[in-house]
Image 1 (cartoon, helix red, strand yellow):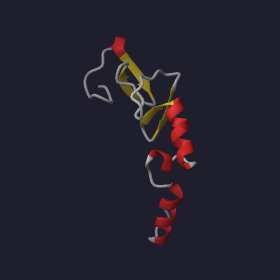
Image 2 (cartoon, rainbow, N blue to C red; image 1 turned 60 degrees about the horizontal axis):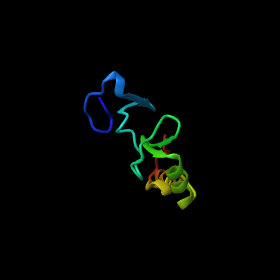
Image 3 (cartoon, helix red, strand yellow; image 1 turned 90 degrees about the vertical axis):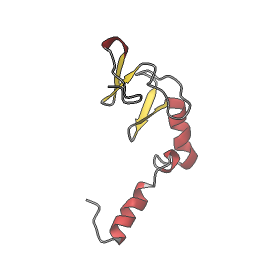
Image 4 (cartoon, rainbow, N blue to C red; image 1 turned 180 degrees about the horizontal axis):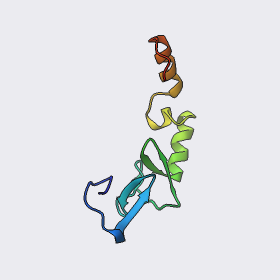
Length: 88
């Protein structure tokens, strides 16, 4: 089953990356929709990017969380400390 379009994937069109299975045509950059290969992709939180946009989004905020639209890890940690949990 393709992780992107949720349809069956036949062996000749199968592509596996980071334990996800895709059709070759469905394996594309989340940001620009460029077709990816196993040599030119980067993944973060189960989302796939071309190397160019992965680097560009990192440079945008200087970290992997804010640049990709997630809350910064240190903020989540601080929030768990103020709520009385230890984050484990």
